[in-house]
Amino acid sequence: MKTLTAYTTLTGDAARAAGELAAQMDKDSLFAKYGVALAFCDPDDSAETALAELANLLPFPVIGCTSIGLFHRQYGFTEPAVSVTVLAADDCRFNIALSEPLTADNAASELKRAYETARNATRFRAKAVFALSCPNPSIPIGRIADALSSATGNDDAPVFGGLSTPNGVNNTVGVWYGGRFHTDRAAVLVLSGNCKPAFASRTVMYHSGEQKRMVTKAEGNRVYKVGDADFADYLRQCGLSFTKADIKKQPFFFNVNPLSIEIPAQKKTSVQTIFGLDADTGAGILPDRVPEGALVNLGILRKIDIDASSRAAISDLLALVKENEKDGYKYSSIFYLSSISRYFALIPKHKENLKALFSTAPKDAVLSGFYAWGQFCPIPDKRGRNEPATHSAAVTLMAL
Image: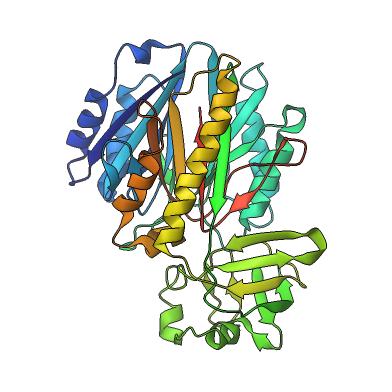
């Protein structure tokens, strides 16, 4: 598999941006039998036109999403910009599909249909699923990961990817497919053939105090009561100060204060970013499901911990890559997804954080990615099998 990368800033001149992206491509590599382009970009009006023009210049299909910030090996952290990574090979397959608009009622069936559309385009077993979707408060991110993982059936393919983000100026989010952005769908890439993806993830949070409480009322990804208090009052008890006007500033107001969520019955602890509050009920809206009886604890993200987790994640990934290289696999690309909560916690030191990552990553690897509103990345179980998992306030990595 060969990996190509291109990058350009957005200045409103879409034709120039598309031309610059195409000019950076190694034309010889584009003659591979199979390929796909993954594009991450600022939700700028010119991005849609630039990607549409680029798609006409490439022999491979293009999928992607919007983000508040991008990562690129040569340019570091950037905004506003477009980053394109092309995967090309003669012995791998890259099949894509798009869901219909997702709702709470049809998400599972539509994601399964999209996966099967891409999977059935090839006779080879799926080796991984790269999924990009739009955030929807009524669809917990875990439902997306579970639906896609279940759809892979006997292929048992790991699911990687994430949710698109806006840029803070306009709250547009989108998934790119078929020549335009979609604000309510998921794009699915099924990788198959001679490839062995490797994955790693790290979540980190610093607890500013001991405010552990039990969730006493919850439904899906909405937490109504913590102990005897409404969720909003629990946050105030933890020291956060906000008004109803602040709540309307969502989705960014609570991002640097994620929750650790401990489920004693499952001996499982996770971290979730707070999407926001329901202005009418005071309920907390989280990326994934939270069961009643879970123990929650409010914390804060710190740059020192984020940097350490980035280095640890890439070290974990490289250990897997080294092991797989014994079987003859060679890796040329690393996809790096970080949570939007880490974006806000790092202001204005995003580039310093990337230095921690780039200093550890192989010098010849193409590295690209974006800030996501939540991620899918498998974690190994005790038998070494990849189990579907979702992440928030985390860094997730995939090497190809």
